[in-house]
Structure formats: C-alpha cells, structure tokens
Length: 263
Image (cartoon, rainbow, N blue to C red; front, side, top):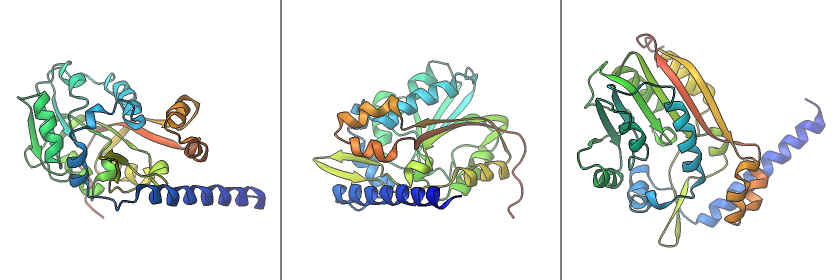
C-alpha cells in the first residue's frame, strides 16, 4: 500500500473515531445492559417507524424468508423482542413458533399483540425449553451483537436445529458497530445499548465449527438510498463520515452435520 493511500486510510479512521467520541458525548449516557435497555425501550419500540436499521432489516429479512418453506415447520425466534417478524411468520402457517428474549418488557409487548404466543425469558445461549433436533427454522434478527457469548449461542442453535434445518440471521454490521452506537430516546434522554462488534470472519468460522454451511450473505450499505434518513435527522455529517460503510448484514445457513468437537 502506498504511503498516500495509507495516510488517507489513517485520516479516514481518525475522522470516524472523532465522530464516535462526539456521538458518545452527545448521548451523555453509559451504555445500559441489554435487558434493562430494551425494557425501557419496549413501550415505544414498535412506534419507531422511521428507524433506519429496522426498515432495512424488514426488507432484508423478508428476502431471506422468501427462500424458506415455513408451512408446518417448527420455528424458533431468538431475540424475538416485540415480535416484529411474527406477522410474516404466522401468515405462512408454521406448526409452532417459539420466542426467546432477555427483556421482560419486550416479551410483554409481544404477548399483548399475540396473547397465545409461546415465549420464554432466556438468553440466546440457553434455549432450554427447546429439545435437541426439534427446530426446523431458527431466526435471530438485530440481536447477535447483544449476545455475551456468541460461540456458545451458535452451539446452542446447532443443538436445537435438526440436520437440514435453516438459520436466518441479520444484525448490525461490525463495520458500523465499531464506530456507531445503538441508541434510542427515552423521556428526552438518549440511551445507548451495550453491544459487541464481532468480525464476520470470526462469526462465520464459529458457524462452520458448529456444523453449518453457508447459503447466502447480503449487506445493506450507508449510501445514497438512505442519505435522506440522516439528513432529515440533521445528521448529514454522520452520513458523510460513514458513507459506504456496511450497516446491516443478513445470512442464510443450513445445518449439515453435528458440531465439531471444541479445539
């Protein structure tokens, strides 16, 4: 790499780091734990129709789901929250739909919309209410970066999925997560949610180790298509700093074999 390119790269990252520090000063909040943050957010979560990440996730997940046969299948939703995708799932007549989440508040909102819902207060690493090999489709959307032990979660997902079962996964892209917070506004105060940025290469290696094989991976970028979201919020500078950065990824994997023994 030439010195010119190297110096340009350094300047770009320095700008992003300055931007991240500035954004953190604006939030004036220590990141909350995942459960406590989503409990606070739960009452208004479904009202945020202009949340860019949620809008992109709706589109990306719908495309992934269109490739999967759901009718008559047992489906597990890890990090189900308020059940954002449950309408799409239930419309396709699964034999069972089970949700797991760490936030009592989010589960309460899901139950208010689906009184007969089967949901459990549990982490992604401990799906103890689902027996081994009984799940046909496992989904996890906008949740994995909040999971404390991703490797343990993936092993647990492999445990409950049958061989040939499908995994649909979307989340905040680590390239964006490295420089931007996940936040929401509560009573005029900006709340930051605790999260971790895990490189996709490490995530994919963990999935392969657990016995999964990839089918497709897609990304959504911060580009001209979403510029208006930033400008409407008065965050044009943030857009310019992050332009071209992947914001969201989506993956479809299939469980092909039992997990390999841990190294």
